[in-house]
Length: 74
Image 1: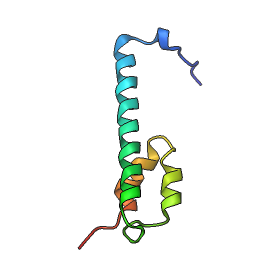
Image 2: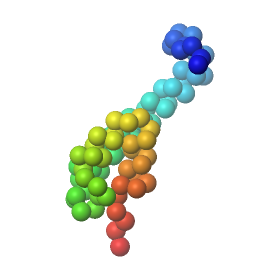
Image 3: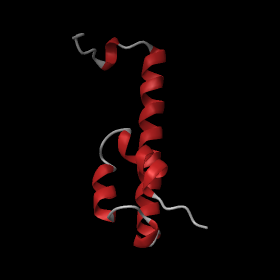
Image 4: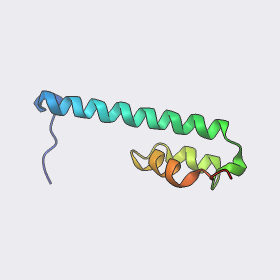
């Protein structure tokens, strides 16, 4: 396994990529949590508390919610 790099050891490009990824992740989490709060429970697959808990699994939670967690409206 590779040794962990410290922030100061990263190149400027990698620092920007990390920051962009962090902002995107935070934006997806906020959008997910707001959508869960506003959407009625019958329009969500599974329970709201389960999806809220999954929001804090990095990368997986928000993407899986938007792909599978919301019911399509006719």
